[in-house]
Amino acid sequence: MEKLHGRGRQGGAKRKRFLLVTQLLLLSVLVASAPPRGEAAPVPVRFTEGMVRGFLELKDAKGNRIASGDFLQTSHGGEIKSRMALQFKDGSVHDETAVFTQQHNFVLQGYRLIQKGPSFESDMEVSLERATGKYRVKVKEKGKDEKLLEGKLDLPMDVYNGMVPTVIKNLKKGATENLHVVAFTPAPRVIELEMIASGEDKVLIGDRERSASHYVLKPKLGILKLPAMLLGRNPPDNHLWTIMEDVPAFVKFSGPLAAGGPIWRVELTSPRWPK
Image 1 (tube, rainbow, N blue to C red):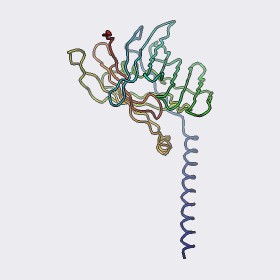
Image 2: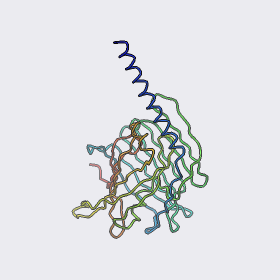
Image 3: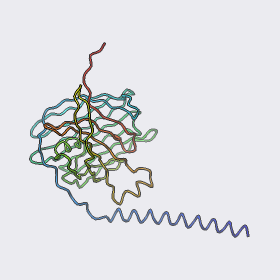
Image 4: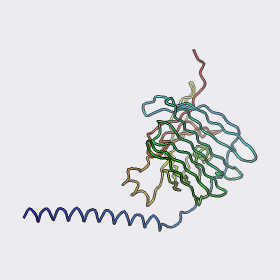
């Protein structure tokens, strides 16, 4: 009798493994045969971008400053180059650059991202260009050999890596918008990002109280959501605050800077005189 029960348990375990493998294979088929994405229209330009410099701080969930840096934006030959460069106290680097045009609509033309150091799970260097659709990803996980991924992507006109704060500044107050971003995990995937207006929050600028529009940024994985949950990689919502009255201005971002990373806050800061 014990042998029969043992065989029954073994058979049950085999059936469970078979069902799990079958489900994963079915998911793979669904992903491979998914219909093309509906391509949303690019975001119209309401406020043209130009030369800008801002000073940034990066804080962890406890409010400790872990990095400082700059937001640098220049214009040349009809293109805008927007760069966020953060230097961490532990020597890590986050350096993100977006090049875009703004003739009637915002269109991303090129993107580059460098992340390296102990604050990140892996060192990564990414480049992406619209003209050819080519991407290049170099990634090196801790204790492993470097990997190189190269190929082409079909980029919708509303892909806005490194440009989400700029896009939100150009929305009408309270408007909700869907766009696309390329997520590097490290293999690149074009995913939809829903930007949902979520009310107003009070902020202080000096002694003056102002109102900042709060946007919730929700990655929409579609049929990729279940595989992401199984792998423990379901991305959290991000949050962004922007002052929308008169001339729009970025206030704060909250979310991970890398796939699977911790929640950090990017905020504006002002120069201080040393003692």
